[in-house]
Amino acid sequence: MLDRHDMITRRKHIDIPEFYVGSVMAVTINDPNATGRSSRFVGICIQRMNRGLKSNFTLRNVLDYQGMEIMYEMYCPVISSIETLRLEKRLDPHLLYLRDARPEYSTFPMDMEPELIAEDAPVPINDVKVKMIDGDWDKSWERQELKGIDLSGLTELQKRMALKRKTPDYVQYDLMKEYRSTLPEEDQEDIYREIAPHYPALVASQRKFRRRKLAGDA
Amino acid sequence: EKKKPQSESMLCQYLRLSWRTHHLFKTPLSRQLTRAPYVEKRSYPTDLYQDFVKPEEPKWAPTFPSRFPPTSPESLKDSGWEKGATRTGAIGVKMGMIALWDSWGVRHPCTVVKFDNLQVLQVKTNFSKMGLVGLQLGCGQKNWNRVNKSARGQFEKAGVPYKSHVKEFLVSPNAVLPVGTPITVRHFVPGQYVDIQGTTIGKGFQGTIKRWGFKRQAKTHGVTKAHRKAGSQGATGPSRVFPGKKMAGRMGGKNKTILSLKVFKIDTKLNVLYVKGHIPGNKGGFVHIRDAFYKPHKDPPPYPTFFPDPYEKYLPVLYAPDRLDDPFIENLEIRDIPAGLL
Image (cartoon, rainbow over all chains, first blue to last red):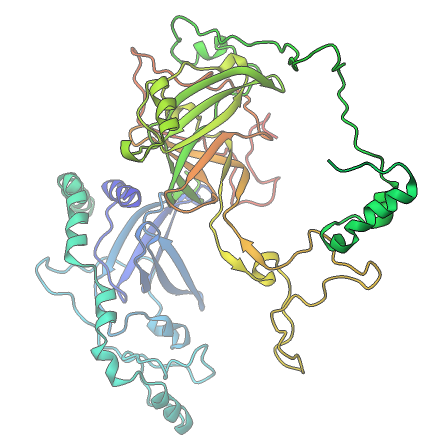
């Protein structure tokens, strides 16, 4: 209850926009040791963990032929702004395989401009099949059921091993797994009742941020 | 009545009758013979006094002021606090853990401790330990049909609703409070250090590896049925196992104190403390909180406790002051530390 309260108060001061794994984002931090007291990082979101107050996401980019990943905690007061430059989804729940993919799939210019989408439009899904490097991979990505990888360059042994580790078909009938992935309606109602008094203030602050953004762009 | 032996030989015979039950006595026969007979001794002459009379001890009479002054920064200097004075502790309920960020971006894991109807039940001044006097506090709520007859009398005498947990704190006679005063979260100052006592989580009967950190033996290489056993219990010479030998047994459920925990945040509306670190016990368990022994106050705290000024407005949430030096820079020469801090 207290951490939910802290999350709401933080959201009144900063606008956390809609984003998914695979969307390109820019984050600015208040860093007292940086020039201008702030530093900005642009990258593709490869992982998003929803854990309440310690919810975080990692951004990946390749700068000067060096791959870089930074994990940001969404409710940390050091973050001054979060923007989505390109809102899109990918076929996989995480994009950790980009570490073993060719660098062109992880490079994004630091002065990238935001690509706007209509508010009512559905979120575009990127069907890209990423090509991997020829050498050794950090993890055996072919064994995990990842749809965004181009698996044409595998050896016969790797293909056999990939089939072995496949998750069995009966997992789709697991009711307890489905139950555990969602919260029951009664508990959801309790949470909404807790948040309800703060809702008007949250909506007003979101409008304020959007107005500031449009004024800044224009 | 048993006949006392008159000579040494008779004494031996007298004692040898108990040889059949020798296994029940711990002292060997040789030591029984050499031990002196028991004679009742007192330091004061018993012939003069028929009934034992306790020597007079100095009585501390609590002197309550007619009106407690409000605690503002000006009045704190006149509150009577000295550097060695001990003020009351408090009883809290452990609610769980949460994280707090300070302005440098450092994340501190904190436990949330709630004060639930904390009131003074009794003032005990008929004794003094190390110059300190007893102050009994009560915390929590309890149903009337669950309260003992003796406990009921205790609460009714104090004029206080029934409490579920009672604890006495040693307090300097200056810091005594009248019966019924509530102790709120503002008794503690954000930024101060605190000692917390509580009963640890009970783990039941546990083996030596979990309980004492013994190393387990090899899983293979010929070890027969002794992978998680303690092994040897001592050396050959003493021919016995020393008392206090670490062995399997009940683990947890004991009273433990954790010293010098920092108070990071105070919420006066919810009556809640945020303390950095971990606390013994489960959620919903009672903990005893006192000012830290090894990190005493430098500035005067609310003494004897916090009394709000009716003409002053207080902030609902108080935070501890941040550190002035950058925690992310390791080289001291680069750090911008203002003079006088180091």
